[in-house]
Amino acid sequence: MSSIIEVKHLVKKFGDLAAVDDISFDVAKGEIFAFLGPNGAGKTTTIKMLTTLLVPTSGEILLDGHNPAHDQSGARRSFGIVFQDPSLDDELTALENMEFHAVLYSVPKNVRGQRIEELMNFVELWDRKDSLVKEFSGGMKRRLEIARGLLHHPKILFLDEPTTGLDPQTRNHVWSYIKNLNEKEQITVFFTTHYIEEADRSASRVAVMDHGKIVAGGTPDELKKQTGTELLEDAFIKLTGYDLRKESAGGTDHMRTRSRAWGRR
View 1 (cartoon, rainbow, N blue to C red):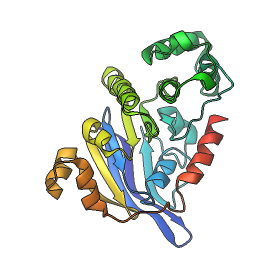
View 2: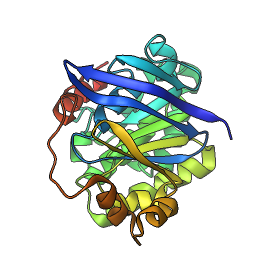
View 3: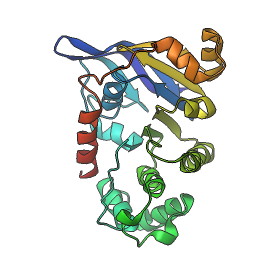
């Protein structure tokens, strides 16, 4: 199966710090791919480069053939994204949020309404289309963000910790939508999570990053076999150690700022 995401010798430096230090990996079309790492591993910096929010120091990224460093518009058309922090406008209705995003992504007016209705039905929110987003639960907001990220028919969906802060029942519900979407439309899903069991259950392949480098990769079963563990979470800890971590220079706080800015584009 051909690769839709290709990363070759990617480097990102902040001064003397190499937050991402010569990493290479690929993601196949239609794959559910988990990108895991402790705080400060360089994971968020990598995602920002993949999604056009940072320019690499060196190396190459291709998203469906588009290099984000040289063709931001083409790269952005190839993917949708759900940020860790909410980026919806709480003062607009669910339908207004979808319509605003459709305009930003130049979804043709003659198909816009049908596409919005189709996606809102898919995430079971069409009956709440006229409700203000501020009235929604956390799970409903996540579902709406997933629908919004799919409006322009992307081939890749980036999910940055999509279930953070949700209760277990809602987390399972969100993942049922993601898996159904992957099976129905063969969309490639690239996600990060600190709930390692989500990667164990859902990912076809996993990459583990630590100290700016890819330290392991393979299927969940391969990583468990490699580390002699029964759970992917135990394999993850064996691969990355037991020490608590701090965020790197390109870490979460900056990502949150950019995610809000993206939502206003």
